[in-house]
Length: 214
Image (cartoon, rainbow, N blue to C red; front, top):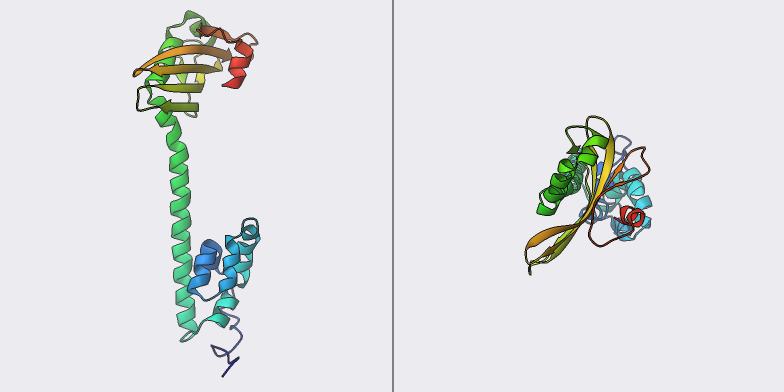
């Protein structure tokens, strides 16, 4: 009969009408699996930011109304499985993003251009005098590294450095020709000191602009 409710009672029992983590985490995917197609609104940019919370709050009620369930336990078990699946997807996704971001410094530090920069810093007496003994680099290195199949490439680094006396930031650029790297610019800006230490400036770049532009 048209309009006949799929489940009895027609309204979801109070014990089942709770926040739905499966709907919140998996939104439109959960919606298809639970015949709740209003969840497809989560595919619309900006609207999705609101819709995931609407689905979390009303998802259980909509799922009860839109799909036939054998009994309350069947409903409860299915929604629990959706919640577990959603949590796994989010944890894996966040972990993957974190691993990708965390791997960037390792990629930059593994390049020959980076090692050449650090070797030049450690060999410079002015850097040693300003930073102190044991000049080393920090973990969160910024910059870019491009290497082409034809042997060309370019690199730019912003490297937090510190020694026994002070901290600072080293800026460097390098180019790769026929598979060989050459440094073009190496500058160290010591914290609290206005004048930078210019170790190398092959292209005669104005130093203040070069330091800001890297």
